[in-house]
Length: 454
Image (spheres, rainbow, N blue to C red):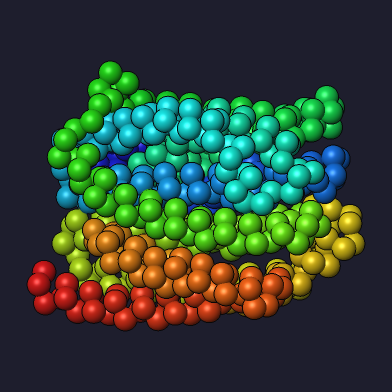
């Protein structure tokens, strides 16, 4: 396990080591950690789908999953502001600012957690009805979401704490904690759902308990650290200048995640109009689709921290080279993943349900979307690199126009002209291609600007 004091006193491999090796060393713990984090909800879906039924599968993984993705996505984006600032302070060896950034970040997590708990529990029924959630699953969806929001504080604390550890170069500790907590979730899922027959409620309680464990572990890790990033509960507070800096970098990325989630909610609402079978298939596909997003997110987080530390250390040429290496690695991994998902699609869907109609609908969805994953690589890596140098506004604008607004316009038109699942799904490749081209052009401009002015 990486000791933060040791990192402070020795050579920093992120700014001094071989780029491709260090990217992979940093990437794999994040990838595996993201995999285990995703397992929280995936295990819920598998167990309720197999032991309760397709209605429970749709309740856990349909509208509920989109709403939780919106909330967690916003905060993950917000925490990226802390990640970038702390990574830059860490690269520059600014101990005072890095430590203040740590305590300010925890204050953000605790405050946001309290607000979201109250708002989420109160607004859950209305949000589900706005999404055209089928009548036969809405009650279970309400139960699942309200319990989830009851423990949202743990989710936010873990995400912020793990982001801080990764900003310092420690991507392994969050992984260890997630492996342990995922094991807790699986055991409790089996106990509550299969053993006690608690249905969706049991799955939600199991997830909440596991998330609480992960939050406690990551907080204890930071509290026991003797290095630059040492957490003291008594010092958790907002620091004006650092708070502004973290919010300036984090809020645009958070809103970008919200925009993605809103478009996904719009798509979920359209899918829900086709009935429970289609909703269940989309729910199961969402868990398989998450495999790609785990890889993509891991590369995005890696390049943000990598660029942030090297930019803070003034190594702009290393910034440029790391982006090219990261793009190459992500393209190779994504292409292999596409081949695997298409080849194994039928077997994978049977993990969630035995209903042949649901399986066929899901397989058709997967074949239409997955070949286009390679295009999204450019969006994730280039946006992450731009965040690393502190440029967040333009990437959000590109995302807003290229993905969110265009996709919503597409959906509005499709539901009137050709209301079919393939027409809805086509919104993904169209918007990804346009947005990727915009990011490539802007990144090349930004790189040329930095070379001239820094």
